[in-house]
Image (cartoon, rainbow over all chains, first blue to last red; front, side, top):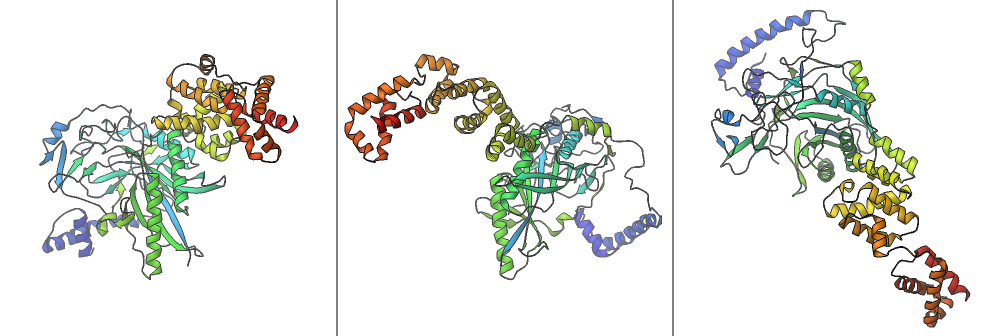
Length: 95
Length: 479
């Protein structure tokens, strides 16, 4: 794994890391990738892809409104709010 | 050099469920901010998604109506990105195994010639919340009511070749999802919105150019405008020796231009993986068969039937089948009336629709029920009323609950069709206007209108016009 990839991943995950830490993560992540890569050596010719090991499907619930507003409890967790909205540093994707 | 535009659509359709895709919060539009977002929607630690059973049949219905394959084993994936209106840090969506794949849709653009556009896929996913950027002293406000609302995202192949085709395709899908009753498709409320992929290539080429994606268009008009200006922008760049950068752009209706979004270059590195919190969805053959059997008559079949059975033009059939309630209303009027279907179509698309528009009503939900309109049109058909007087009766029906017959009776509006009565009136007029008669006979045909006017005046407009014309011609040329 390249240092550049570690930095890219950190950026996507909004993690701030310094150079030493990046090098350490590079070593650790490389090992993890190598470990997982062992799976690639198994011959899977003709074996269908599997997302889950269990022979069960997703349980479903009826289409009913069961929750009432928990706005007050949620707002109590927010560092900033106004007019019922959570306030966050300005994010704008505009032309 | 001449250029060909190439267009593909990504359409987000909000499914008309009561509750969200993975939680029991309400999906109602217009609630107070953050009152319809629960612990699951806000991604509090320890919560797990619970899939809404109503969304699966709705997605399957769309697949069946677009000749698509239904993936009977499908799974959810996480699409990872950071944005404040996405509390989980990922959107639950589908990647490798969407519920609907490889279909097509047919539609008319200008005439009866049909165009076919492939549907690459339609997958289930959740909507994000809403960011509000005004008036929060440099901060953004977040409303999570919409977070977790169920959507299907429909992706077409790049088979579309003009802005007009794109709009026609979009309108066809808009009509279809309402027929299927899987979405209210209300564009003002964002229940039906569209991203458009646009590229251009030389007309004699079959290699696509670099495409740009124009995001979040929520009206047919904006789709058409945005494609037009984006096409022009790309052609200008290429003709002046530049290249097109693949990017996401936004359309500004005020400025009539598209502009690149200030997104970071890595915004599309979504690192999808199968969602470990959700098990696969398994759809049985029986479920598909049951849904297939229960599909309503679809807009295209209905349009073709209207043309065939009622001898309507393609254009009229298209307009009448735009919504199912309107098509049903038309058929109810035809049933309730002795008038021919063409007359019914003309009245619904003309007089009724314009009166309904004036009061912001749908044509099928005005004071004029199918039965009342049917009787009025019967009275045109059997010559009790001229088309013109029928409009007067219609106006009175709109203001009251009286039937056409009651109004005709009360107001004495019955058309005069008695030949001898009309002839007597014509004789008087000929006698009183010798100069005009002379002019007509010496070849001044235009004066004929004067005589028609006189007869109508004498009968308060109640003489049958066709009959008046015929009798007048005969009298003026003989006596």
